Image (cartoon, rainbow, N blue to C red; front, side):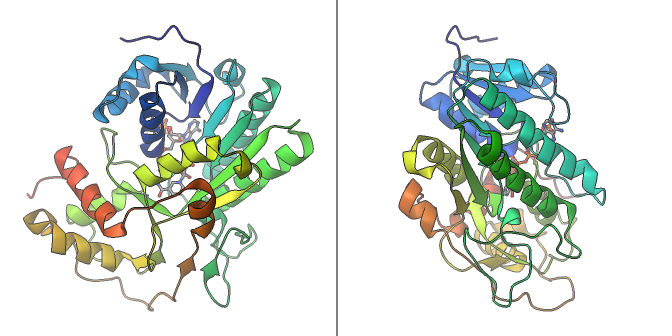
Length: 329
Ligand code: NAP
């Protein structure tokens, strides 16, 4: 096992995650010493393997154990830290709101409080478009001034958790942050090659389409953000002085898309590997037009998103290369 003698000043929470492994790899590639939190230190080898999959030396990586739902471990995780990337938050579908809401909100507050207590400089919080655009508007055109209203009737647990957690984070830094800087990043649906040994989080939709278990795609319109571009935006959000106090939507240029567009792209570009991808949408109404703006991130963070088609194709190639899609029976 590699170890580092340099004390890290950078922390990434939730090191096992789809996004966090990419952020860790990008940080380690700069030569930084980085600490990451995991719920259990048993996950260390898995995270090291993920980072190495990016071709990066994991020697600068170290680990601390902390859970979003417990106080234990956060003070030690934050010791000596200046820059915090708070990516950890439950990315699960559940009818039990508290299962997602409590770790998302209370976890963000635990991280911010511990960051404030050690005099950290800045927290980059991974929020989501789910905290921006999940309340109805007459015209679905969203920028960073929009907020998902937690009181929206029928709001699912995940967008509720992201809206409440981001709001709580801004309120905390305003009222008791003692100068701690906060930047929120609000990616839309994230896709792109994974470094993890399983298809986590948003990648489940891809595996469902590619292995044929999803027989018809949901009728939904959304933005797509490449994991590599989102990770790069995290580093840029940490390094850009004027980003403090702001939130940034992150997604590819061009029109928003539907799952049928994703399915059609997979079929058109991936040959027999995409032969089980559904050709039908579940019955229902056509999703209304949706516009999501990424100009602020482009102007202020140097965000240069790659084309969505590239993201979709390379997601599937990554799942194929890592054997994460079940072979045809
Ligand atoms: P992911 O792979 O499921 O990662 C989530 C991370 O949060 C994992 O490290 C997970 O740890 C950790 N976590 C969950 N509950 C926890 C708890 N109670 N205590 C400690 N850690 C906990 O999902 P992801 O896509 O990388 O998501 C990362 C961030 O991006 C999240 O904040 C998510 O809301 C945001 N985001 C994702 C998308 C997307 O489409 N993927 C879009 C917009 C925003 P375990 O491995 O132990 O479960």
